[in-house]
Image (spheres, rainbow, N blue to C red):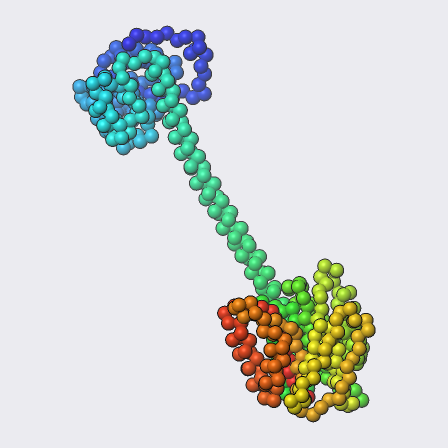
Length: 415
């Protein structure tokens, strides 16, 4: 192997990084030629026996090792196999004669050999192999470094995800607590048992919500002052605004108290018109909700009932006779009239939203208003506590495991 002088093209090659390699050969002439040819491109270490090679590897950062196969102390494949556990990433190249090629092939996987070169080698072949070997080594290092960076990034990302998740959990908890609080406010403002027992002879209230809050509300009051003796019952439902609807029910509670207790409006149609106007004035346009409402106003002195409703009805049973007082549509709210009928002894009154008969079974079939009316007809002569249990059990059997489709508000009572 003759020593080759650098050509002008080779001398112009610039390396951003000068890699280190170790050449092992028991013939010193080969060592001198190799170093002379490649020292410009690489940091070249040489030695003439494998044991010395092991010491050089320990003391220097070597990227590529080139070793002759036939050496007295140990073969090249034996050397590479020996250093493999300690230097798994090092690129390993072996020089061999044609007669040893089969032995080299057997040792490629065992020793982690990157390439074998047959002797005699020439400069261009060796230079090309060494350049590709250095590129392979650098790619391996870049990949490993990239993996480390990814691991660090993943750790940081996981930490940020944990922090964000915890932050969202806290926000979600505050939101759920607020929603639950709105629901508790609704529950607390419903007419309680003691109050209803004082103003009504018998009653039940069925109030079930799909979520923590409800878009529906049942409201009652009584006014007994001097010549005035009234009992008022209202059922309210807001459509399509979720928690906004539940907050609207709280506003409606306050408005109804003002209309009847303070302003003393004793016309069921006027109560609904004033309630609608006050609700529209409360809050922005985006917070407005479609309203369904029914109001029953009992004049206990005159023994008459006024009823008005918007998309809600009222059912009265007097014995086996069923009377349905139908509500108007929202287009007629400005001309809302009041049905005035006589209060019959022992009559049973039912006011309700459409939630009960809108409940769907597991096949998506609604309970229906007709079935609802037939159910009331079948139980109307029973004590109201028994009716309440029957209505609850019936709807539970109907919806099964699917859960409520809509909120339910029903009040049944006798004066």
